[in-house]
Length: 303
Image 1: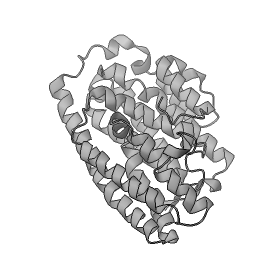
Image 2 (image 1 turned 135 degrees about the horizontal axis):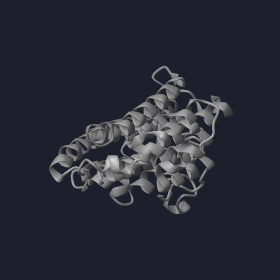
Image 3 (image 1 turned 180 degrees about the vertical axis):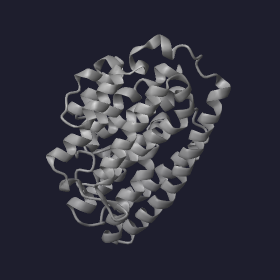
């Protein structure tokens, strides 16, 4: 996994294990809610257990993949454009000393980045520059959103954050400029979807990502939306190869979306401190139920 997986939680270990092992591990998920049913369905379905049936359809050709890759590029560029605009608003608030507005703009602006994180990681050091948490990198190299987050919430001021804000905006503008050049291959989509869920499981669901602002639900939702966009783009090909698997993934995404909708608060989301242990346990179970079938997409599509 990437540099961000510093503190691997039990749920993350489950995700990584499932990604490596495929559908045979589905029956190991033991819960007392609907997540167990969804996971076990993956193991019992013909899509998950009968490899020859999935192999009857030839892998997607380069001509079939290209429209999907082009659409994903268009999606990421649109998100990056919005990221520049919203981050500039956030940066302006920081530089104006408007701590109230800066705190309000912080989490929503980050969502655009969290949806397209696979692209940022494919372009070099943008992810650590933009999204590193404290202790992820050397103190002298630490910058980006979370560096500013600490100042805003722990020190309750904008003073000292102005330079980091300028650097953040410069990094994001450069990321946007390079979006046109990144080479997008089928494997990036497939692994990107799984890695976005791993991001959620390793730091968002544990509350470690936004350790000062406790705005983890914004990141959680955005990572899931980024993974779901990839699934939607692959849905026609996936349905052609394995309709049962495609249905299972779609149902699992809906279950997770519905669970997250409970924590909406106006145009945003509740503080992660408002969640109880049973809330985070349910979200972890739903993530596990989704990760197992999602990890099979690459094998099914030949990506």
